Structures are given as structure tokens and as C-alpha cells.
Image (cartoon, rainbow, N blue to C red; front, side, top):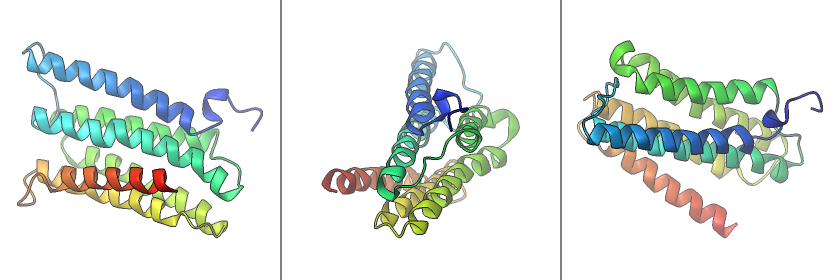
Length: 185
């Protein structure tokens, strides 16, 4: 791990930085959209894009950074670092870019990347927690459910399910539940 760049030695570094940066970028794009200065190249309706990116982009990065930082403390195992962490962060970043340009590239690739990030994060977390026989598996399960909520949000934005608000409402409920469990633990 000593040969690894310091930015990739802990999950909180790329994900907290990336989440904060994306929060600012997405907010600026949203303000410019409201002001009529830009038209986003996304397949999402502008309000749906903003809501999606605040939940699954910004909050999702913070959840990933927290989980990847907490797992070594919970399990006593080494943190996910170096190329595996860079790959996971790259998947998150690719999903953000793909969702932004989904109007140009279609809805499938962004949905696969976006949902795939949470599936991958949950699998990485589950592997670490299960190998250490740790009690924090429910938090990892909530990350998996967060990915399912993301899939529902993509399906709702595409008009594939009757209630287009189901995904983001489920995700918001999961975030509140995660904060409650983590804060209580």
C-alpha cells in the first residue's frame, strides 16, 4: 500500500472529494438550467436529473466513502486501496458522466453503469464484512437496496414503471435509515 498514491489509500479520499466536487458541478448546472442558460444533454427531465444526481451522485459518493472507510475499522482488514479503489471511483465517475449525457447515448448504458456501481460497492463490502464475520452486514444490504432504488429511478424516468417517484422516494428513505443506524451504532 506504500506505493499507492495517497489519494487512493482510503475510500473517503476520492469519494468525499468526488462527491463534493460533483455536488458543486451538478448544482451549477442546475442553476444554469433554471436560468435558461444551458440545456442539459440528459434523457432525464431537468428536475428529475437534479434529484437523481443529488441522491445517487452526491449522496452515493459520500455513502461509498463512508462504507469504504468504515469497513477496515469494523473488520480489522486492510482498506480497499490502489487500483481497486481507482476502478470503483472510475465506475462512479463514468456513471455520472453517462447519466449527464444520457440524452445523447441512450438510457441503457447510464443505467447499467449507475446501478452497477452500487452492486459492485455492495459486493465489495459484503466480501469484507462476511470474511470477518462482522455484524454490519445490514449496512451493506442497504447499499444494495440503494442500488435497487437507483434502478427504480432510472425506470421511472424512462416511463417503465407507473410511479416515477418511487425510486427517489425509496432512496431518500434508505438514506434516513442509514443515518439513523450509523448514528445509533
